[in-house]
Length: 316
Image (cartoon, rainbow, N blue to C red):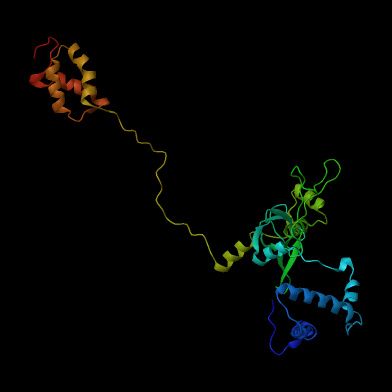
């Protein structure tokens, strides 16, 4: 509601005039009668209203107010919504709704089509409010070129008892394509422009034939050439150390004392040696084990170990 500014009585002149008529033509007579309760006052006010509207001539059109009222046609008279809906409007606030790929929004448990909203995009969030002129209607906030807010009514989508849209295409009888958004319309125009075609079919044929967009007039690497030339950038190789490659180091297997014993015991005993004495020598000479390739070396050492020399006869 816009509050009237001081010094501008014409902004609410009709209200002031109506109050003046009630005060002078109706309330002035109340001093000559006794009113006992509010019901009696309302009865007197209603009777005076019917009398005044039926008999008093209006200076602007020369008719009584009832006569002027009867000239209004049914299609010209806009009736207000039910009282309950008006109370809902008073406490309801606009809410955001996301546009679906079908150019629909959900608001208040109902679905509405926003395909007629100029510039609407899939995934866009729209500000939606109840429509004061339709109990099941909704309005969407749009903006004109000057940024002024304009509320545009959007139609509700009706569904049949099986959950299908009432305006859906009938299979085998008709086909209804999805309306393109502004972004999709622009994309199609850009497609024709890039392929140098007048129609989408011609553009698709050129693309299928591997035609170069924009007739090859655009160099996608021109900015790189210009940048390198402007900065005088050259490639300077740096000195480095060659990485070693194709070289595999194989570590030889090291036999533990237990593994040495398993391999040497049969050979020493077969040669007639004292195995217990040989074990003590192995533990002393090879406490960490020995490489597998040196096993024969260890055997020869045991066979020729001075006073511990092993003889085939079994004596030392």
